Every structure is written in C-alpha cells, then in structure tokens.
Image (cartoon, rainbow, N blue to C red; front, side, top):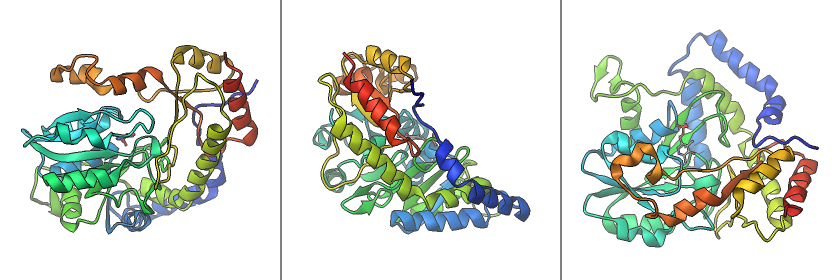
Length: 366
Ligand SMILES: *Cc1c(COP(=O)(O)O)cnc(C)c1O
C-alpha cells in the first residue's frame, strides 16, 4: 500500500534547500528583521510577477483583505458581496471593518461565485465585491467588473489560493481594484510561517495599506491612522523571493497531475471540477464531489490516501455568524458543496506512480 499525504512541501523544499538556507543566512548576517531590503525587493518582484504596479507585504492573507477594505473606507453600515462558498477569512475581513458580508451562491461546477446572482444582492449599502479565485481558478472577472462599474463598487480579489493563475492572460492580482494574497505555508506560494500581501495599481491605496499595517504611520513616529501591526518580515520575504522563482514550475506540475485526474478518473459517483474558458487553474485544491463522501473518504484513508474538505461547514452555518440569523437551506449550493466536496492529494513532488495509485483506487471504488 502507498502512503500519500493530502499535501506536502517536502520535495519542493528539498530541491531549494541550499537557496533557502542562503536566503536565511543573508537576513541573519544583515541583522535587520522588519521592513528592510528583502521585503522591498520581494514587493517589487511580486508586483512585477502579478503585472501590477504596487505590492505591500503584510502579516497574512486575512489582514491583506481587511487592510484593503479599511483603506477604501468600508465600515459600519456598508455591505460587501462575498461568495457563500469560501474560506471564512474572506467574510471575516469584511466583519472586522464593521461592514456586513452578504453571501452570493457559487456555481456548482466551478465552485466560484455565480456572477448572474450578484446583481440581486446589491443594495444602496453595497460598497465592494470580493472576487475569490477559489481552489486556484480565477472568478468570472469580466462579469463581476461590469456589475461593479454599473453600481460603482470596488472589486477586491481574494487571491489567497490563486498565485500565478491567469484570466485572459493576466495574472490574478492585476484583475480588480486590489488583491489580497496569503503566503500561509500550504498555499501555492507559501512562506515558512504566516505572510500576506496587497497587490494593486492604485498608488493611494497601496500607500494607505502600508501605513495602516504599520501602526497607521506614514513616517517614523508620525501616525495618521489608528493602524494595525501587520507586516511581512525580512526572513519570510527572503524565503518567498527564492520560492517565487519556481512558482510557475510548481503550478505546471499541479496542472499535469490535475490533467491526469480529469482524463483518467472514471467513476460514475465522482463529479470532477470544471475549468471555465479563458483562464488557467493553479489547483491549490483539487476538489471532487461525491454523494457518498464519507464512505469515499474512509476508503481512501484505508488505502493510505490523505484527503480534506473545503469546507465542511458553510459560513452562514458557523457559530461565528450566528448573529446573521441565516437558516440552513438559505444557500443550498454552498451547503451541497460542503456536504459533497472532497479534496484529493495535490502537490508538487507527487510521483506519476502515486497519481496512478490514486486514480486506480478511486476508479475501483464501489
Ligand atoms: C488562506 C486564505 C485566506 C487567509 O489567508 P491567511 O494567510 O491564512 O490569513 C483568505 N482567503 C482564502 C480564500 C484563503 O484560502
């Protein structure tokens, strides 16, 4: 029996070990750990990679989204459209500002927000749409941007799962007014700890986010906002600079694996994920759906295959959002995804034999 974890950075990190240790040594020898050269170089490199003008490092992905919303002046009394199927951080970023997340259902096959349902959720209080590129697939940005233009809304990309994905040949991070990225270790571009970034073409927004994440300070001991402490540190930035150089190679490998899953998984009980036209998927998550998910999960586990669920409880049914008083059944598609979605192993370093083994096991499951 093979043993295949749900995710692993082992091979990836083995291959770049020398460069990573050298990057760490550079920071160690430089004796400067917050807001130095590594962060500013990473910011330049990541902005260029995304095809945007500015990047501002911050503490994590949640903070990136929160700082953007706050910098746009969104707060109490405002509403922000959020997909009903996403990681809770997307909605929490809205809640932290005092604004209200308004959920809109996804498409069952792409898992991303259904643009044709957004307009009905817009009210005079709506200020922005959170366009989440869930599981690594860009959302329907043209439709979202058209609505945003019509109602004068900001479009904020939650790109925490989609580093390197393309929509009409443009990278995520350059598709809306501003984007939040996470460098949580398990993301396609992951630090060795927490990290995040704001990417935008809007200089004013970039400056404001930078100040807000640094105690509201525009220069030392001069505070123009009641800011937060949310900064990317020199060690993580130096390590991310190394990893950014290989991101496309790692995403390419994820795509090879996904292609084999899509071409070779053949079991009537399994629904495979769909990539919509004019975009590339970076498969942060390879999510299949299955009515008998619990049984499939157990069977794969018994066969040494790790799985996960994204996400087992939809946000509107979480205790954290009990205050919204949204009864079960209100978002049936999000509920169906949370009941049936199973994420199978997907990471750089998985061998062809391991991919074959997973396909084999799924195809012979009855
Ligand atoms: C990971 C993630 C976040 C939050 O990122 P952190 O760095 O963990 O704070 C936000 N949105 C989505 C969709 C995510 O997957």
